[in-house]
Image (tube, rainbow, N blue to C red; front, top):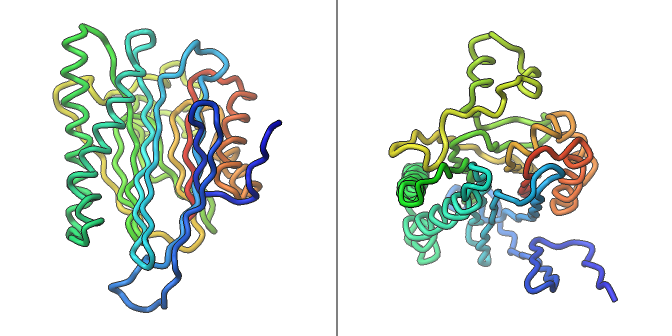
Length: 293
């Protein structure tokens, strides 16, 4: 007998073919105190990944962590990594990237926040940069040891209180969706993005350009990496979306907006986005995280 999920849930895990659903609850506190900014935030989120219709295995890897304690500011970390290299260990590169970024952030920020040793705001982006750089170093070392071509993109968002600190390498993306529609936060490290920036092609041409999959930066490709950093201050009921190119290339911005408008529940939005990407051709692995703040 199939057990139906609850009407609302924040976390969905599948372990040994068993389904687990969890709800994160947090006390609301009076607003207006700058020292408690973001402490009344509530977060619901979901994630989904699929190998797509035209790939024989999934090289994407994604993960999310949340800490919500009474009236303390919300703390969460989300990561999407898209492994590159085909049969050449791309899935190892993406898994390594996620694991190393998490461990680095956990040591530099997460454990300190749990212990009420709150870092200065300037330390958040610096720690993210260091975490992604560490992942690049380790994946590059493994690449050389294996004599492979493996590498990975990464887009990651650390949420603390009412702020999101975002780091990006490659062409996986982070978006914000709110009352003004869909806003892309990150910029792709790709040839077609450069062509758009220099006015040689139109933004809509990136979906059909013959060299749209050519990126000039990824985790592990070279010894050094340049990490793009962004900071975003949330407005009420905005959604944070992280995804691999297997989603945004198949489900364009208007398709993303359509699903996010129709599906209030983050997990249902993720499931529907993956389904729509496969219906559009599923040319690549598909991964997405949606978090409602």
